[in-house]
Amino acid sequence: MATTFQPLRHSPAYAQVYAAIEARILSRELKAGDPLPAELELARQFQVNRSTVREALRLLESSGLAERAPGAKRLRVARPAGERVARGLSHALLLHEVTFLEVWEAMRLVEPEAAALAAVRRTDAQLEALRATHAVLADASIPADAAVESTVEFFRGLGEACGNTALRMAKDPLTRLLRPTLRRMIDRVPQARRRIHEAQARLLEALAARDGHAAREWMHKHIRDFRRGYEIAGISLQARIEAGG
Amino acid sequence: MATTFQPLRHSPAYAQVYAAIEARILSRELKAGDPLPAELELARQFQVNRSTVREALRLLESSGLAERAPGAKRLRVARPAGERVARGLSHALLLHEVTFLEVWEAMRLVEPEAAALAAVRRTDAQLEALRATHAVLADASIPADAAVESTVEFFRGLGEACGNTALRMAKDPLTRLLRPTLRRMIDRVPQARRRIHEAQARLLEALAARDGHAAREWMHKHIRDFRRGYEIAGISLQARIEAGG
DNA sequence: AATTGTCGGATTGTCCGACAAAATGCGCAC
DNA sequence: GTGCGCATTTTGTCGGACAATCCGACAATT
Image (cartoon, rainbow over all chains, first blue to last red; front, side, top):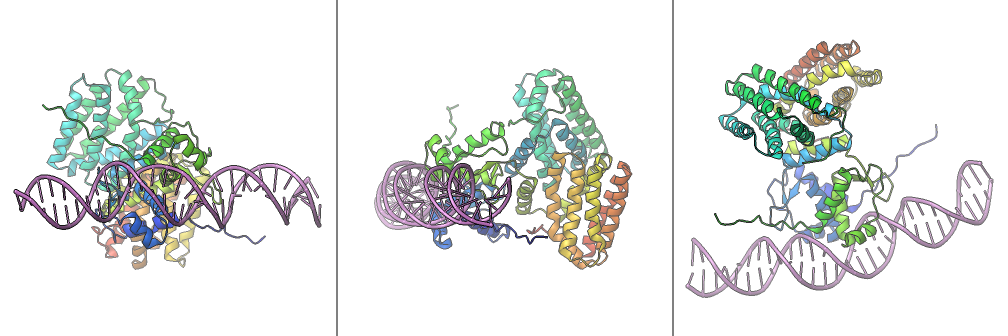
């Protein structure tokens, strides 16, 4: 065989600067909340130009490892918020041509288990928050947008009630992707709101009673119902998920 | 009530440029593979300085929406690879002080369901790939690093066999986080490799027979076994996940 | 025909210097 | 101690510059 070589990779300075700062953050040498040195100071330390530092800082900013408090000037170290991470994953799924069916299926596997866990572990405050979200849907006259938000928020709150950050952050992006199609479904299927509201009521009962088994079952039904709703609405299960939200 | 106003948010130019390009990508106006206009060209179109454009491009690059083919000069539109997304989520979980117990618990809920799905849906090629990964572990003399990689890869391959991108991308980050602690566990518990290898063998049988039920059960046992291993290794379940991988 | 040498234009990586606007910090008056 | 005003820092953006190198085309060689 012919001798082969690895393509040699020289990373640009801005990438190296980024990597250096990232490493400090991941090793917790730089803790969340710590202010980052000023751009000129960083440029001095790394012996590069301020423009180069700025490009590195943009990388940090985008990965959520650094952020600026609203109206603040200096960047501070941050931990990527669930919201940002979820958006990243959502974008990826979006561009990978994920179908509604796939998202639905993933939720069918994950959400019932999450619900069961939430039932035995929810705090009273979390239950109360879920009830508040649920109450919004009781009013049939609220705009469709609000209904969608409430439905999504209910799933999010349930994840929070699991008391498991890893699970919550893994499953949140799925719910986010539901938004655009859910909107269409609610628009087209008049009884959808009532059915969702009712399913949530059953779930809340199970959560109140700390009945994991019941929570799992009701969530299962709830998710199955979603699919039926989509079929009734005439939304193809093979349709790609769209951007939105 | 006094009329109130939202504090108006004037996002910096580089953020606006980023948002503009991002929107074009998410709406598929710009498809994966399309070359992005040159920096000067973008600067001309947006009526900003090239430095500003570059900061925006760094944002794009970091979010995985644009990338450069190795050794290429111009950026091209890309879809965020699973690897990048998983890293983002992993970092977030890391910095949110997620404990091993949380990751384990999330896997306990998700992986068995994923295994069941994989059993009924795997292609022959996917089964073969899993077998190859599994075979690596048969040799007890391979370095610990390789053993860890093989174990992680097995979970990844199983996700792929689900034929569900959404599920795969949601669960991959969890496995990634296993790496550092798994390494320590394998170092300290001599019989760990054999047990993992055996559990994988059972799973492969179930997959070969397309027996979803069996796959779910074996995966459940497999995951439970993990926890036992950690306990034997004396790794605190409450210990924070560490960086690594 | 396929490979190699050469060349010019296009594009990126990095630098420098500059300036306005905004945030920050400090000292001072009260 | 608190609030205010001013000087200082820091960021956002700009313009221009230059070397490196990637790309495509074209000529030369085997």
